[in-house]
Image (cartoon, rainbow, N blue to C red; front, side, top):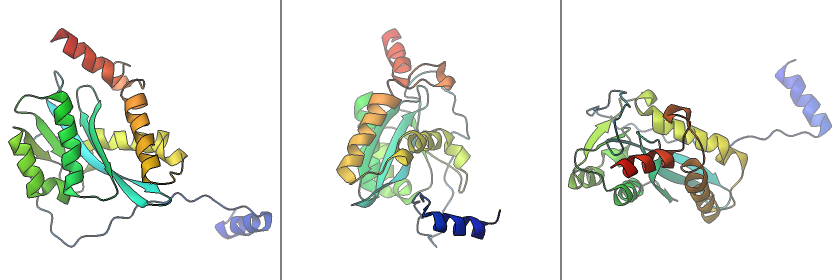
Length: 211
């Protein structure tokens, strides 16, 4: 059956399709320089706070339009250890997410923080924060999402299980829902096959108890 016939039948029956609004980022003519990739898709760890990954995703609200979630994940436990939600996608957004993770986790020096080549992560402000905390910065290759697959996977799960199933009225509503999903469900109740069908919080609690 052709697309036009489906459209005619839908119109006759008074049926309208639901279109999921997608974010289309502005194209940039600025040349992206390759940066050092310390991970090289090696996501293995022996304990918590050895390797962290970070990224930004886009969340739509009816009244406030696009809002932005910056997340930081610990690779050992798959726990979302820090995040920040804002109506603007700025360097401050990603610094707040990383600072949130650092304050909670108190990692030792030498931790690797891996991100893509977004302008927020390659900014001098972000680099300065990373260096001030004794972290090592690592970057994905241009156009290679597999280099940051773990945090990409989290954001995909977040959209599949939460964001794509509701329409947020405004920024405060979305912020509350994200807190409930991340802290109430993803970190503490959702089991993961990659960590032995345990929750991220269970893995972290076990490591800290042994330590």
